[in-house]
Image 1 (cartoon, rainbow, N blue to C red):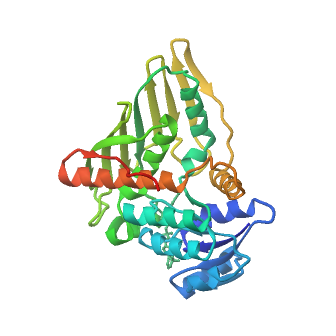
Image 2: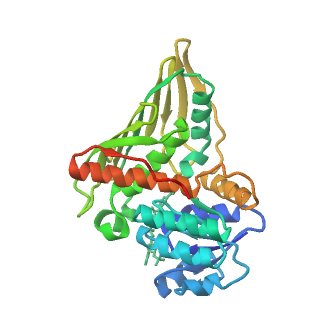
Image 3: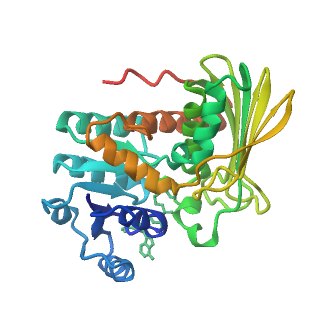
Length: 334
Ligand code: NDP
């Protein structure tokens, strides 16, 4: 599969380009950027054949099968619509867009054009999270009672740009990290949040955007979920705890971009270390994207999954801003 990268971004450089090249016959053949100089430097560093600041030029290349959109968030919508109109399959970064109306338009356009559209929620492609989901599905902890997601960490120095000071680009920790927590718990529990209450705060990093937030989500079945996200917790460690009537699952260090962490099942029989495959998360995202392009059911996050994680993140921001519980119905998929 030939990919055009839309956005000369850190995530493309660190994870997606190596993942694309891990598949025989798969290559990143274009990088599209708002800055010609940045695009050229990026292409030189990463050995990419073609650069442009004109998205249409890359999309006009018939050898491009798919695009990976990892520009800042306010650009995803227009770039995705252009790629879809050109008949390209689209893997789009989270949050899909700045509003639910935009996200719905992207999903509908892809459906109408007959191209595949997916969201890069990488965590559900991790071996750790797949093992956790299987333990729950197998009834190993009985009836699930509550979930706690710890995602309060320190934003790496090199990412301390638009996320901290540009609400127009989709900055703020809620659109950045609550979306991932939401997708992960939806994946584990197989149901959606129906309401949220939340508070957002600044630990001193955010300028005009929140850099920390706590949200309590109530799932359709009544399961309570606590999501704690922050850019400004220098000693924070990530994790997921899932508490059930017959046991609990502790996933330590599993909210990660690498196949990291440990999973422990705790029951009346004691503690059991759970082994899981430690494949590359982004290679798995791409393998499942390619399978879906070839007509198989998509195991990773679809456009609809990205829509729902965005809906919850926007509701969390609104709940924090107003102090009012927000109810979610997601609208009807078209
Ligand atoms: P970056 O800040 O690295 O890149 C975003 C944009 O900033 C680029 O597309 C580029 O604009 C511009 N840019 C970056 N570096 C330079 C530079 N040196 N000079 C000029 N312009 C520059 O963002 P991230 O890679 O952290 O995030 C990009 C997207 O990916 C976001 O939507 C984010 O939410 C998502 N993301 C997802 C992750 C996941 O695991 N699913 C993890 C991290 C991010 P241009 O488009 O013009 O090239």
